Length: 163
Image (cartoon, rainbow, N blue to C red; front, side, top):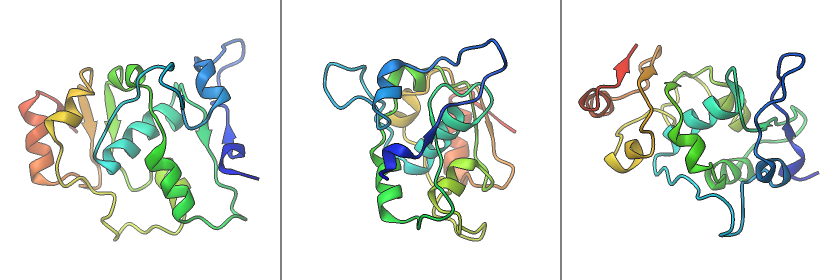
């Protein structure tokens, strides 16, 4: 079994077909050729994980969710997969809300043993280049203070509400 086999379709209410682009369903890592839609180029890995949480796991998810079976040992291959995942820029541009939380499903899938005292997924800074790719972002939830003061300032300068 490879990482490609660890996906489940997002659940949808009865009678509703989830909006999953066909290129994503066929190729979990996103398109591999230049013919596909352009990928987002988020430099901040914790920011990318928050976007993946929104697009793969939250209500209304539009991408297939990655599910690591408990019997498999997580590690570098899983983190490499998450880092290399090509998020379609068009979907990233539509994200209006992000939640930075130590309980996000994407973090549990990445490393089920990760603890809340580990700050490796905290957001130290948010660059203009990353934020430019999220033009619809209007609100950020940060219940566990994962955002540094510099990251909060970058969001506030853009008029993004932090709750």
